[in-house]
Length: 293
Image (cartoon, rainbow, N blue to C red):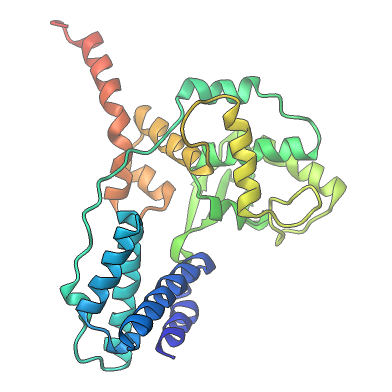
């Protein structure tokens, strides 16, 4: 009962996204099943020892530190809720610490290869080809997340003022500037979509070949298909285009705080991971400019 009340709290009071709600539900149900089977207790009765035993088992099974940390975050939120709403006398998470996680550098595609992709890639001139080009351009020109692109509506795109309103994590809205070439591709797409399916401003921007709202796996397949033809990068996902956007903007001298706002990061530390690629560029500039070089 406590678990469902907590999920309802996140959904209706905190207004968390469906994706985030699903993550919390999965984490808490897994934990609940574990302690019920192993110790015959419910989450409200769990101790720090129960929690550490569960986390230890997850890590032994090969779950990554990042995933374990997410589950710890879910539990912390849940027990804070119980402290506030159910007068929990002792929070078991106080004695539980998260595992150290080594930061992985983001995979990105070079500026040259991104330019080649858009200049030489043979996008068909039918509806599907125009849509697929817009998907790639939208990711690379704005740095938006996959979930944000999928949920984008026509009313969010302002081609007159060249800006896009995006609803990100925690239902937080932000405005992203829109480049003129992206606006032109968008208008071509809208024209093609109108001719085949029609639409109104509250409709989802991106639809499948049958006119249905686009979904995550569909977008992933589109991006992966085109990137596979132009890069040997280990990852060829929409998030790689987001990484590429941020890295290239920083390399061109963009202010890191501005990039933070465009990406929708809650803290600057999340954005600083993209500064990794500036080191080589700085070395190159130093060698060219320093009189002793």
